[in-house]
Image (cartoon, rainbow, N blue to C red; front, side, top):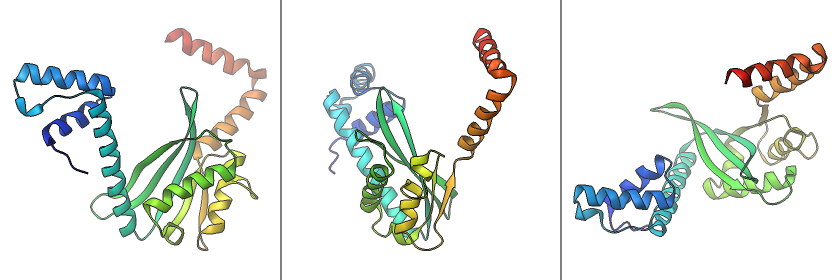
Length: 208
């Protein structure tokens, strides 16, 4: 990666960090140049901002890859979510750093257009991990998922597939919040014939 205008790049990443869209970041960049008179900022368009965003992703992925290569072990966290009608596989990594202790790294949110089966999720996640850390099968200590059957199924679940390709001792962990949600849902059904939950949400909506 060659960044010809470091000042412009730094400002662009700052604007993106503040949740500006590519178009908004380009507009703010031009206003910044106009108000400050700093010619060093140069001209900028939303296409340039998009290029900078790709640069930032590449730089961060490279840094994550370097951290994983040095780590003696780490854990993988997977979660399927939906945003604006598009499903994503969210991949996080938990590892220990000497200067920071245990950290949670947001790695990727990968669009998932195929069926969300355990096999598809495993293949997508393993391909990403193969790029970031070739030896992940030897050093990964566990996988964290929610409690859905496609994640925890004993035969074809994602957690089971990870255990099959990893070293002995690899563990699968359910998300505590999801387990609590299952218990609460079962409780609500038997508690006041679900009227308690309906009244509670109605009261919350009214107060909001």
